[in-house]
Image 1 (cartoon, rainbow, N blue to C red):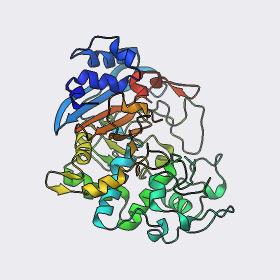
Image 2 (cartoon, one colour; image 1 turned 30 degrees about the horizontal axis):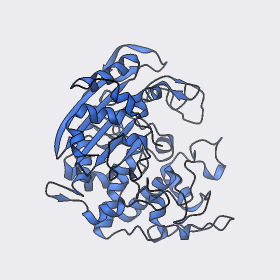
Image 3 (cartoon, rainbow, N blue to C red; image 1 turned 45 degrees about the horizontal axis):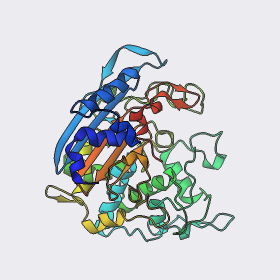
Image 4 (cartoon, rainbow, N blue to C red; image 1 turned 90 degrees about the horizontal axis):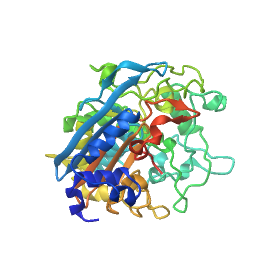
Length: 414
């Protein structure tokens, strides 16, 4: 890929949305083709899209399409759907892992307060004990969590007593933290010879590591250390709790809470349209919305600044959060699966479709379950931020209607 490919933003973004070259070559490209493509999907039923492209520190494109709220609690289209605005905040889902947790970890490494090769128990002294299969917490390293090779399950439904044993059930952050740190077992061995298994548990635990090191809640730490120095006012956890924001400031997600169209039930389950509350069940119910894996909200403006920090190798203006050495460490491909760095997903072997057709092998980024995605290409100093609310669509037999659109597919992690 050559940087001149980015001279035509429509070509760049269509390459990002479409998987197959023939889809691009079969249509005529002009300045309006991308807008028409997204607007057509909105007309067909996709809820809302916010898109930003930056290159060399300048915003090349920033636009919103569609609606932040389209359905009521019954799944009926409301009479006057609420349009997205440029400052609308989105549930970032797993982008929390990068733009809260990883940013905090990279800063702590830069300060010398964290070493990714250290055992987890150095920072959480009571992180000890073994499985019956002799898989022990003492052997787990920080980098095992970052490469998703610690051996944890991809997810554990702590909040649902029908899905976990009584000793693992929790709808309280402190209790959940204690469970993960002292009781939760492993599904497989750890180590550099393991294939990564993407796990929310890894990042919940990394969030707890940050809190143990800093003595602060993760939301307080990233706010004071990262977001405030950057002047960000729309990037935060639990945004409608004690802040001057209303539900209407946010893009909505699932129509009937966490019930998947009334097919799921557990204590305290939400049954209303989610707007301004984190969708992720583990984060909301078991971690009080304050977790290293999910819970962050942000908007286009703030995300352009956060991605620019990475393009600047850890600096922004006169503020340095980490240096190039730290950033290179976190972007080093994992030997058994080079699509993984330390947390970051990498385009190293160009097998992840959501990086698009023309991103360089040096590109990296992440996606979020709610329909969010960032792609950062340092070779051409460009970043693409795609925020959608694809889950704000009917859910039939466990599948959200928003997933059938190309715009929704482009935020799906493989």
